[in-house]
Length: 214
Image (tube, rainbow, N blue to C red; front, side, top):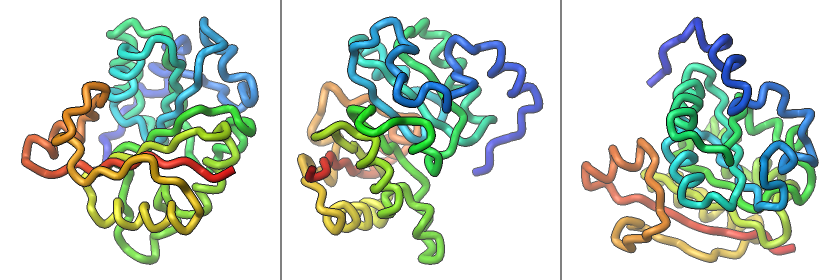
């Protein structure tokens, strides 16, 4: 479903510059200096959506700095609102595209990357747009620290299977593969809006945690 256009979004994002990083390219290699705790690990969520996951993670792990990337401006305003309401200081949001990761983050700058309920792009001709296509994996490997993790969650079985193959072909180490995450009752799992919706319908949630061989 396409997000409704919000003509006031630009002004809203500028007004909330304490949460919204308007010039993210200038922070490359110095992202932790943006936060009050610069020595903390840096975690990146690609596809932040309305912000429920990143806000929940930031509250649960105040010793970690979080950057949320969302390409749709009319959606990221909801994430800004969510973070603002929670009065969280260890989250910054950016309205950028994952294609530009290497211009925004330096080599070995990020500790963990989250891919939550990414667009599955089911048609074969759109394979290159999937966030687990090998060209994206190359970018992740560059910006992740040695032994840094990618954590993928999805309700889409086809995307999950595709991603497992893509990770394997790229030589990743699988730390976890779960085909029904909620049966694990992981106390550290923060649900996204999509996760709540689909799990309420009885849809299994898939999760994997992988690392690159260095």
